[in-house]
Length: 197
Picture (cartoon, one colour):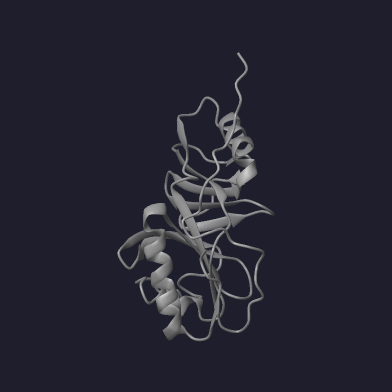
């Protein structure tokens, strides 16, 4: 029997992000475009899977042209990729880890991303996040589990000269987290609005 793979269209709780808006010296908070996301659990000797490094230190982020992988614990990773590549990525990870006990779970429908970009990004995030987000404590290429207000999140700081963060939260918390960030932005400096739709 022929097995057909398909993806159910997902309604983003904050609306879909359009093309990136120009960013000035202030702050931009916007829903991230939909992505495929996978939670990977694996013990034992590490290397790579689907070309993504598994042996980086805990609480670090690795990126390539289209994908990212955050190591959140000794045996836990969160992987992001373009939405159309979900089945290809899952098949590649499974093939590379064949014969090794692991769990790869598609959490694309559970997670929602919110991008926070600009020189005042850390100020807005610190309105609800207790972490020290200074360059020495949380440099570009960092990733960790933490809280934002009352919501559990994964906070990622992407490489680049201007601070750029990704807040990954569960879909049920997305409206709360986005609203908290929008409110915090009023005290963080000029805000370039990217309204949720």
